[in-house]
Length: 259
Image (cartoon, rainbow, N blue to C red):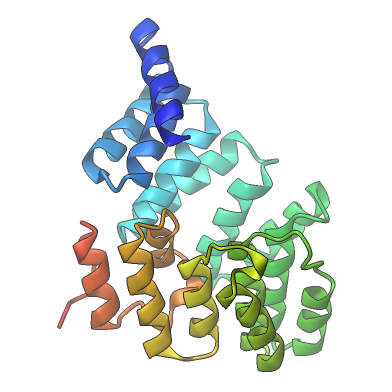
């Protein structure tokens, strides 16, 4: 699939190198391949060639977050949200950035906007749950989480739900979801990043690192995101985690130091 997408984007650029959208797609493909320098070049070209294309800013902001360049990521993220203020996924990343800054009022405002646009949007619900929990409204947070249907969710999204349950003290519910993830929910595939996320929520650093390392072995496309996701705060400064990032070509951010 990636090879096909790469070919289509490359052919588009051969016909017209000014297509910012094609540069953005190539940037995403390079990012998935952990070709960081090439990915950033393509994202910058996407913004240069299509300065009104919100997705180019969105994808570049994620790339910057993966590299620990949070201030730059926030600036780019805000620009993307200005260009497309009705995109739930772009607003999701903006809300998460506000949460990272402990700006709960701004985060709550963005989450409310997501709800107004799409009341059923998955990350709108999980973010609402997190904000309520931060406000000490555990019961209300749990009601939001219990209202999310688990059937049909991706392994990654199940990881988010299980992590939230663990954070709310509902560890038995978290472990029930974890059991399904460990068995592949009836399939042959395990998503190591999702499993690591649940262990992080349960406060089990050693198991989190073990599954992060497995994700590294499998070259999971989700693994770089773990640096930006708050769900992995348990290990963000763990030398073992930083070593994994370094082995992927992701340098240390400000304040990080491998021991």
